[in-house]
Amino acid sequence: MAEKEKLTIVMFSGNLDQALAGFIIATTAASMGMAVSIFFTFWGLNIIKKNEGGIKSKGLMQKMLNFMNRGGSKRLKLSRFNMLGLGTAMMKRLMKDANYPSIDEFITMAHQMGVKLIACTTTCGIMGLEEGSFRSEVESLAGAAYFLGEARESKTTLFI
Amino acid sequence: MKADQSLDCVGLYCPMPIVKTAEKIKELKPGEVLEVVADDKGITKDMPAWCRATGHEFLGTEEKGGEIKVYVKKTGE
Image (cartoon, rainbow over all chains, first blue to last red):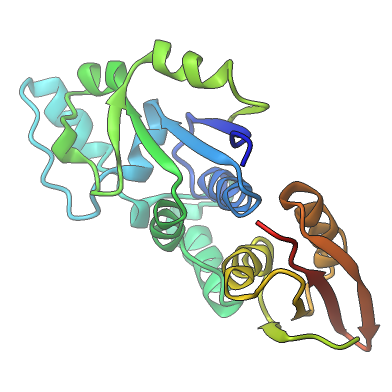
C-alpha cells in the first residue's frame, strides 16, 4: 500500500468549540486513511492536560498560571457565549442530548484511531508543564522543527 | 439495493457515521456491500468523498422520508 497521506494540525486554542473542530477533522481524516498529528501549543495544551489536575510547577508565576489556567478537557469553555459557564454548560447539554461525543471521548477515539497527540516543548518549558501534566494519550513532547518536518510532508496543514 | 451488512447511524452527526463506517468496513470481505442508514444529510456528500479517499466503491444513495441509505462496496486490499 502506498504511504499514507498526512494531515498536521496545530491546536493553538484551548476553547471547547475550536477543540471540537480540530478533533472532528482529525478523526475524519484518520477514518479516510490519513496519518494525523496534532501539535498542541499555548492555550491548546489545556485540552490535553489531565482532568485531575496535580500539575507541579516550580516558580510562583508558573504556579499561579497553572492554578488559574488549570485546563483539562472537561474544563474547556466556549469561545463565545460562555456567560460565566452557563453557555458552555448548555452547549455540553445540547451535545449530550444529540448523542454527540464529548472532547474527552474525542481524545480517546482519536488516540485509538492512531492520531498522534504531541505537546509543544517550548510552551511546556515556559509555562512549567512537565510530561506528567498531560493525559496518557499524549505521545510525546516535541518542538517546532518536528512540527515543520511533519507539516512539509503533509498534504493538509491546519492552524486552529 | 441488496447489502451484505448494515450499519445503523440514525441520530448520529458528522463525523460519527464516517468513523463508524471506516471501522465496520474492516469486517467485510472484498466485493461485499455495506449499507449505512443515517438521517444526517451530510452523509450524501461525505460518503462519496470518503470512498474517493479510501478507494472503496460508492454505489449510490436511497432517500425515503428522513432516512438516507448509502451503499459502499468494499474493494480488495
